Amino acid sequence: MLRTIVLLTSLIMFLSSCATFYNTPASGEPAATFVEKVDKNSLGQNRTFSLAEIDGKPVSHMLTSNDNNAIRVQPGTRRMLFRVDYRNDFIDGQFRAYFGLELNVEAGKRYQLGGTVSQRHDVVITLTDLAKPDTPWVQATGVGRAVVPGATIGVAGGGFVTIQGKE
Image (cartoon, rainbow, N blue to C red; front, side):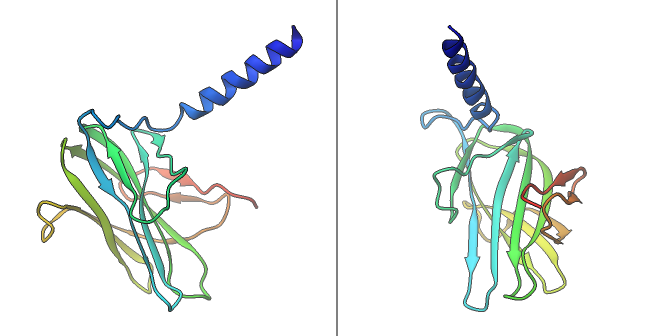
């Protein structure tokens, strides 16, 4: 009996932890698609523009390549947290910037994430409607901070995020 209770409790805890991620719409349901972007070069520079949260729930990147992932999002007004991870060279280490935006997401649209990062850690994130690739849909600016496990940093658009990791 005790073994059954322990197994059921473990199963419930596992299933409830899976439910904390954003629930991506099924393939037949109306949705917009956000395409993440990864840029790397031989000078040690890399930039990853990704979608971290939707409506306060983290976006799962399990079983993905982390290179130009397509994230399906339910249409409507969504509170979204975008993350830019970058390294300017081999020496400086990893940096990160967050952008909290409230967006009116339209079904059937495809949005490309991208942007720029300067040597002074000024970060611009750009969301482009792929039907109109020459005109940015949304742009936001922020400043990157060094990735230090356990550090709390401000989010462009309001709020704070704590960097998870080992100390």
